[in-house]
Image (cartoon, rainbow, N blue to C red; front, side):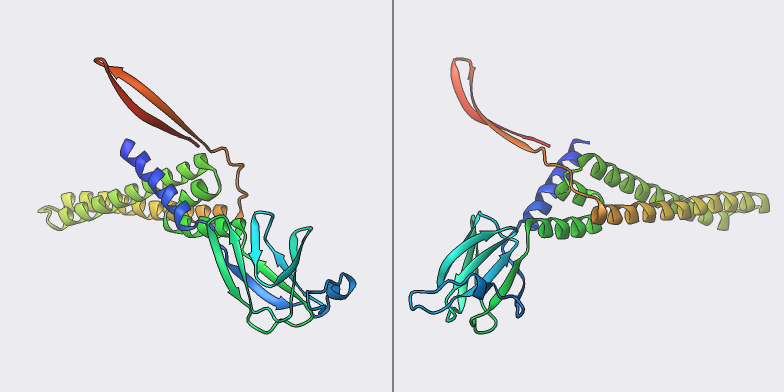
Length: 252
C-alpha cells in the first residue's frame, strides 16, 4: 500500500512538472475597428504616434522588453504603447522568457496579443493526465485528491476484476474441452459462461468509470488549493553525537 501511495504522489508531481506553465501566445491579430490609438494617443521619442498592443492573459507578474514607450494596466489586459517600427518583444514571468517576433509589420493601429493562462495549462494538463491515468488529473490540477483517489482505485479494481474474470473464463473453458463426461463438460461450460458474463459486466463498469473520469476532469471546477510546504531544521543528539537534518512536510 505504501508503494501505491508513493507511485500516486510521483505521478501527481510528474504531471504537474510536465504541464508546468510557460509563456505561450494563443493568437495575435489586428483590431481594425479599435480606435484606442486615436482616443488615447501616446507618441514616441520621435514624436510619432504609437501603436497599441493589448496583451490579454497577463498580470502584474509579467514584464516586457523592447521598443515599448508606455505600459498601462487595464481591466483584464495590459496595453503596450510601441513604436511602429518594433519587430519583437520579450515577455518575462519569473524564470520563463518568451521572445516573440511579430508575424507582420506593426503599423499605427491596435493589436491583440493573447497569452495562454495558468488556467489553460491546468485544463490541458488535467485532461491529458486523466485520459492516460484516470484520477491523476483531478489530483494534480483540480486539487481534488479524494475524488481522484476514488476514481483511480475503482478503475484499478475494475480492471483487476475484469482480468481475473477473463482468466477464469478461459481456464474453465479449457477444462470443459478436456472433460471426459457430458455432465462435467456442461458444468464447466456453465461456470465458464458465468465468468464470461461477469467479465463483460466489468468491461462496462471499467468503461463507465473511465468516461466519468474524462467528463469530470473537463467539466468540474478546481477546488481551492490547500497545499502547504513546511521546512523545519532539527538537531538530534544520539550517544552524545549531534546529527543535523531538515524535515520537509507537504500537506495536501
